[in-house]
Image (tube, rainbow, N blue to C red; front, side, top):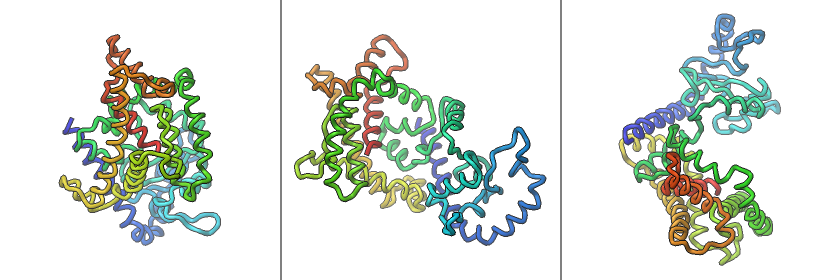
Length: 362
């Protein structure tokens, strides 16, 4: 309800404030405290659980030392690489995670207050897919993901009463929609229906690649073309930059989505946005983000609802539309509802799930 949404918002803001503090205020303090902290750890390690003896059968994974409040930041925030260069770990995560794996092996620990668990921000990272299968098997009904840190989107969805906000929670709502989504996309029989669409669209997309100078812009639009073909049975042609190749509203959707995704990390970490949002206000950066998100989701939902209306009116669909993920999901879920299944997705939940997937595809 509204109360739980407000509580999630406050929790996300608190986490974001903690990340900001440790990202901006701590580097100087970390440099000052690094030598002292190293000495403290070296004196107490034989009594501490910071790093358990390797011979212990219950020993936690190796990793960087962790201290209360500071976590591993005295050692991890500015990380030296083997070639003599260094990286700011919270900004250059690919490089810092790779270096952590090189030093400590495929499973290791680091403390990042505001993100990890407990007073030292304990995180365990895994770079071994075989080991990570165990994580997936043990994560329970409501797994945690970075999507829960996207408080600006959750604020926007809550403010506008959008069903899509349920997909950004750790709740039965999320699990219900996610399970319903999977039934028409993951099974081999379902994939057989839309595989031909992907093949046809993929051939067109590949031919458009040489027409682009900006690989990032091409890849975003190519991904959208492919997923729109799968989800809607439509040939969008956003990856074709030639005038008139795609519809203006399709290109506008790509522009809005890219802007929203580019702004999101900045809004999450923007102190004025966090402070103003806690008061129910919107910073200039938040207003830009909300405008872009609204444009993207309004477009995506309109596409989905247009096909729902055609299905309701029993209008003829093309072969690709008949084989699309959306048409298959609607048929499956409506049949389940007619049979009295309590877990059948509503039309609003179908619209939310397909719309957010279209946005994520860019």
